[in-house]
Figure 1 (cartoon, rainbow, N blue to C red):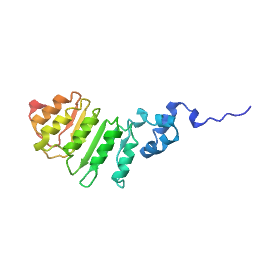
Figure 2: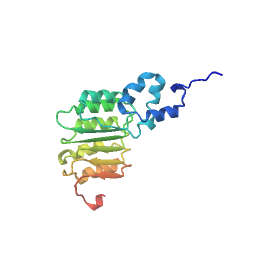
Figure 3: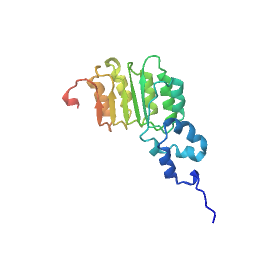
Figure 4: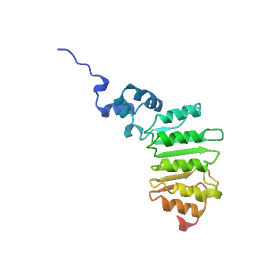
Length: 196
């Protein structure tokens, strides 16, 4: 009696998805989707991406970061550094146009996120649950708070600058606009107990 060979394509989808979940982001973004249409579909499964965080590596330039993002439509979490000279504008464009399921955005660095980029992010990524950005400066905190308050699914908000001030009015705007909000890290800010 001849022995039948079992090929990878003969495996149940659940097993293939489990195998894919052990791959690195670059293989998931570039290699797997090119094998077949079926693999491309399986490689976008929620269970593969739910715990993966894209953190651009130190040696990765902006163009490499952008190209990877364009191949990660199921990406759930992005964490990166922002400093002058970094093309954060194009990186956020790539996130907004390619990563339709992004739930977590974490940005640290020495500069505040420009208003226009925060606006783009809050308009395109309405399903964000976690947001961590350089702190709002008091002079423009109301406008930025209005943008953040549109994120109805937001559960966690963190401002990464420990020593800047956030006004009480800005906090109220965020709290009123984000009904799912459970956690806020405001750095070393002080505010009135009645606003908690």
